[in-house]
View 1 (cartoon, one colour):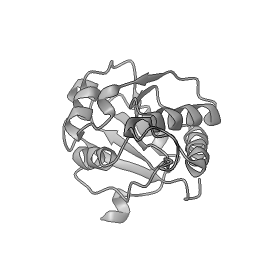
View 2 (cartoon, helix red, strand yellow; view 1 turned 90 degrees about the horizontal axis):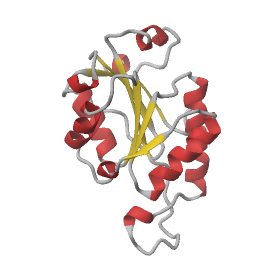
View 3 (spheres, one colour; view 1 turned 45 degrees about the vertical axis):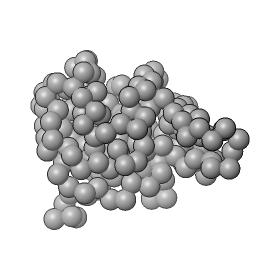
View 4 (cartoon, helix red, strand yellow; view 1 turned 30 degrees about the vertical axis):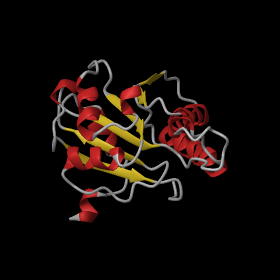
Length: 185
């Protein structure tokens, strides 16, 4: 059962992306942060470290290579999440605007779902850039399954069996794929 749930990305998945009865949610955990940086001890202001900078770029290119660039990006207002998405967008050469969502910092899975329900249906796919444990808990809440370990800069792709974002509810999705910076493309 686990093997089926976490099947690798396949080119046939593009047919699902074109479906009007499925929305796509990408959940990206921020890249590795620098606990030794001078950030004044305020968690919200902690930046990425060198490994995190590299991982963020890797994941941006990976999404571009998979033709999985989201229509809309919702990002926590924390420095490390903002840096992660800025580097990913630049490395993947995405032409997307990032919407800073302060509510994603220290968000619960329920508040992340509420945020998704508020989104316009013009966006077929949305990327949430956030933190742990919210990332794993959100995927768990939407799919009913435990995702693989959500290391820094890991990303999950969840297919949601809905026609409108306001229909998002627990167990409406399935994990399509999961990727970490250390895995091959």
